[in-house]
Length: 131
Image (cartoon, rainbow, N blue to C red):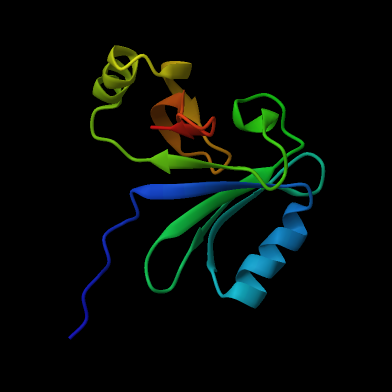
């Protein structure tokens, strides 16, 4: 009897200088499965989505991209995407709690081409995370 795992709703986001080496390590050595890879204009990988065979997923991209909140992160740092039904409600809770909003709710398109409505907030220790 098999059951299908629900899609991941929490996505760690990793940043690498050498995205092709990162992909080889994460897939060939650790055992992640490639779901999406989108090349960038530098010959690397601009965006990748990987699935863990036992459930879960992660996203990674290149430190070369400086045009978003993630582009300002150094290699080895991370963020977390948290899928939410009501992004505006999450934004209001962060504001009400005096939290730091890096990007207010807005529409965007990921490197994979997927569209999303998100906001980006900083956790109390300084890590950004889109919601």
